[in-house]
Image 1: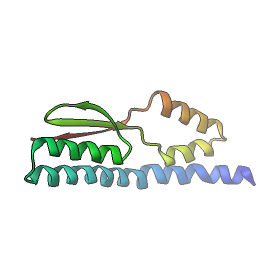
Image 2 (image 1 turned 90 degrees about the vertical axis):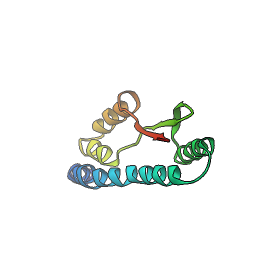
Image 3 (image 1 turned 60 degrees about the vertical axis):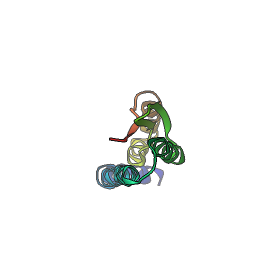
Image 4 (image 1 turned 45 degrees about the vertical axis):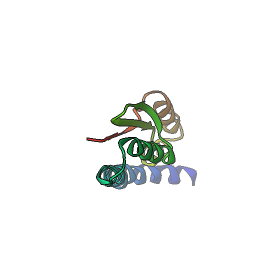
Length: 116
């Protein structure tokens, strides 16, 4: 029974990764882009805008890597459920390979807010 479930997880993981996560990644980035355009359009000081950018990143669990008077850069590693399911579909060992890749090699999602 377990083998059948694992065999079904691989194609479900493929669908999740290539269809659902790719679509959601664009929507996820659009949230940050919209926030940047609405914040830069507001009539407040640049320091307050930078503070709003920092708060947005902190509320979304991003680690602030760089900060200047005109920009803020935050990074966060995003765990892929599709790749995780594909790893489980390759009999648990694939899950361990994915987690090893996630912690040591995966590049974090980077969000950069600029005032200009």
